[in-house]
Length: 371
Image: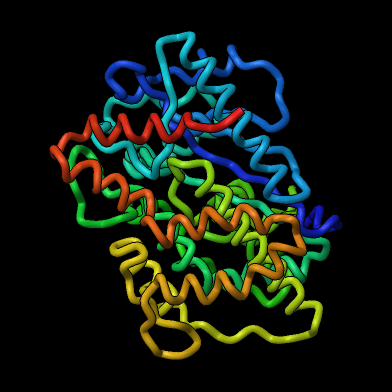
């Protein structure tokens, strides 16, 4: 398999899937084509997703999270301005609290129509919004080591990023409802481990040759090597309403990847993490967010997610400082002190049980990005 794991290491890119909304009702609007034709060139990218009511923004390759943050704020401002000129606005969360997938149109792109043809109802009901972080790696075997090692961090990253407590106008009892919805897809969740890049190439090549998928981009695992970009991509997070939370999580991911890359360079072996316990931790995190008790692998001890998060955060601060991403970790401090996006949605909802008030809060906080 061809790859671009050639460096430089530790470059970073961030992608966000945003809601396109009617500016008055805050209902989703099937308006991606209008917006794609309305935005000027800007560092980063604006692209469609599966549904016409979803807009993806993505930064260019950046040196650190601070640079990525400047681009991400500019992208949010840009698309919100373009939306406002058309009676629209944008919002960011893991799910829209009261939208129905039956009202959403599939974009007119062969990839997505083929996807619906293959996955059918499973694809049509995937009305969810995520945040993805790419980190550059300079060696293919190192990339596999990092991807394998990041598996243990997936539940904690989900606990921090939970931002989808509502689905189809229902309070689900979960803090990341996006997680079980996406689980209906094939090739998702905690990824398998690979021995090295050759093992990865052979196993993915077998799947492609069998005809079950066109290429590795049809693997939607929580963590995946991305050979075309030369990155490891972390995909478990719900979309974040506040841009500072997106950047805080990205800075934490950035530091985690650096720690694991240095672990590989030192010739060390990863601990073995039982798949079933990683998967169980992820489920617990989706249900309870930062109020979860996660099993602190490789031990069998249950630890409050906040305690585990602070322990990991303290360990990562030095790496973040080396990367120039330390300031953005304040977003993690804010999540730990004041709660996740899901906690904040529920706080608004508890006042009047009014999901439009929840959407008002989501929109206001999504577009509140300083110039």
